[in-house]
Image (cartoon, rainbow, N blue to C red; front, side, top):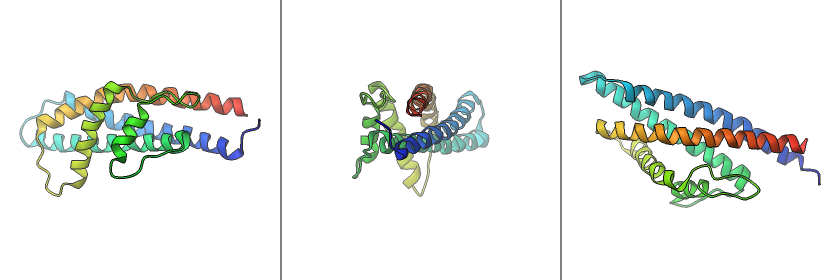
Length: 168
């Protein structure tokens, strides 16, 4: 059976877009690792904490964008409705036999939900009062989650590349 040209294009695009997403995730995680290593006080600590909060928001947004790409182009099903953000996390924790492995384990779902809730707060609050110890906790969660998701996305990119080679 010859694959449709559209399927090949979608897979090639997915591989390239995931590589771009992974670059963004790596950059945000690196900045958060710098925040975790920083030992600042006073106004400098507040400024560094605000930048960390922006990076937590950006890291999760990049992760969710990559998850959406996978859901749309591989699973062919993106959750909708008011709980779609949480449902997308759940969807990415499931193996889709013959299509893709789970991108996250069940243990990471709770941490990602916590980061997602912060992103929602950050995105929708018009007065931001940060608890910088909480920002530090979230940055550590992102660091842990990034280690796991980076490997999962790298493996998926390799898998999609292998599928593309087999179709050519």
